[in-house]
Amino acid sequence: MNIRRNHPRTYVLALLLALYLPRYATAQGMPVYDNTNFISMAKSLVESAKQTAELLKTVEFLKEQKDNIVLVNQTIKQLKAVRELARNNEILFLTVQTDLREILDSPYIEAGEVEQISSSFERIMDAAIDDLDFVNQILSSDFLKMTDAERTGILMEKKVQSQEMVAELEVKTRRYREIISFRRMQDIINNRERNY
Image 1 (spheres, helix red, strand yellow):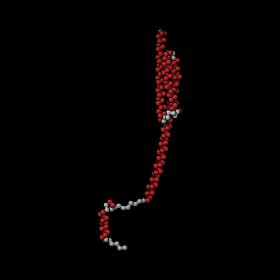
Image 2: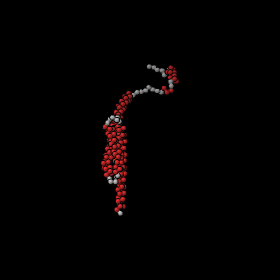
Image 3: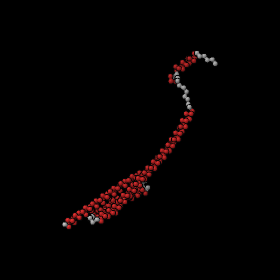
């Protein structure tokens, strides 16, 4: 095959292509695809999808565990509140059984004061018994349709009220004992003056 090197048509065609094609198009070539890279990228995407599915399962599992922990936490708070309520009510009943009897049996408490002292202690005990009944209804009946958080909130509130009742009973007991002590001292001083 004989090809002429100086063919005028070839020069003209090359010149026209160079003039009419944009500058950036003159140096471009055909894109090359590497099948090996494409296959490894597809495998990588499949692996990523599997890992994402596993991560979603793990997130769901952790969410369930968190919900379980919250429920257990609420139950523990309820148990602590109920234990504290029981302890406070035990203190109230023991105080009334021992201290009130001791105060009322004192010779330095006048007959007119017995009713007043008894009613003030009785009022506290009635409130404590009502609170215990209410707590029993909250814990044993589903009639009130409460969430665990609402139930825990009420139990904590009742626990605080029982602590306040114990404090009030202690203040009353201390005050009546101080009255008895003062009257005893007054009686000793009065009897000493008579003996001289």
